[in-house]
Image (cartoon, rainbow, N blue to C red):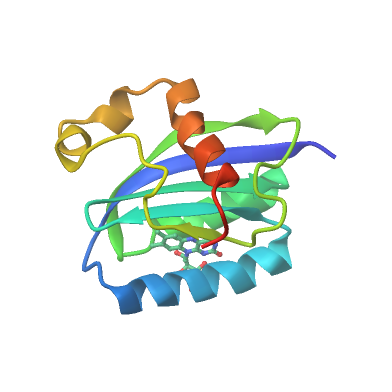
Length: 133
Ligand SMILES: Cc1cc2nc3c(=O)[nH]c(=O)nc-3n(C[C@H](O)[C@H](O)[C@H](O)COP(=O)(O)O)c2cc1C
């Protein structure tokens, strides 16, 4: 079955550890139900999330995420079919930005929006190779 992959970035609104724990708990239970896997890279200045799974489920999840007021400026960066899942064992991996390529200043200056799809994917290739966190 083909896998649909969606990657977006956003800016956290009211970021703290409780908020992050709550997002991850919801994400993991919903995604397990919906056959979605992926990773959420988090830093106080930025979220970068990869969702992968059946296209309609991924799109419905992304719609809910877009309406969530715990972040702003949600922008889709990649959305297309891919041959395989990158995070098959993760309902939602939490990556506290260890795989990150860009500094806060670069992110602030728009590096993510200017990056190629390949560069964006590279962040998640690195994350997928990291030890579980
Ligand atoms: C950064 C971020 C990432 C999220 N990731 C997911 C996710 O992977 N899956 C999911 O179902 N909800 C995710 N959510 C939560 C959704 O926005 C939403 O609150 C949740 O799906 C419940 O939706 P409902 O209240 O409309 O039922 C995320 C929210 C934020 C702010």
